[in-house]
Image 1 (cartoon, rainbow, N blue to C red):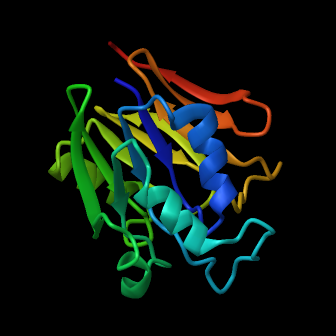
Image 2: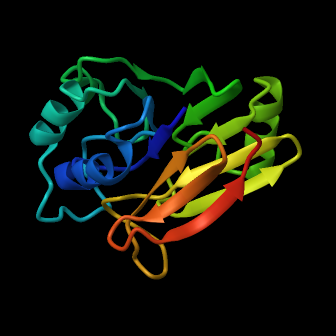
Length: 187
């Protein structure tokens, strides 16, 4: 099974499309950790800011998409999507693993994430919000933040997304296809 992981697209249509074309088109599932359409008052609008176009791409996506609500996801934006935007988290079962997807704005510290992951018996805990990458194992849970393909806050500014595969979880630089982070998993 292959699962695409993305967060913080903030209405940037081609950021989504680049991830889809390069990494998600053959995925079994796409998980979006929130802040889907609106750019947010503190974020710039880049040339590919087109929330209506992003809505069309997500609605017509041939791969199932699960979305957790972010702090910039309004009800009116969510009403344009033909799939639910779940809050405060989404819970899926894939690859024999319990996967939690939350945006992260209501669960910011590692202690809060560890507690929620333990309560929900999460094998993989996905969050967004900070626009930077995290990939680490603490206890029995793998914590993943795919960063942002649209508005990266990494020091080097790289646009990123992630893929959960049978053998590993990888975070990719979308422009170069470089694997920036990798954590081997058991198949």
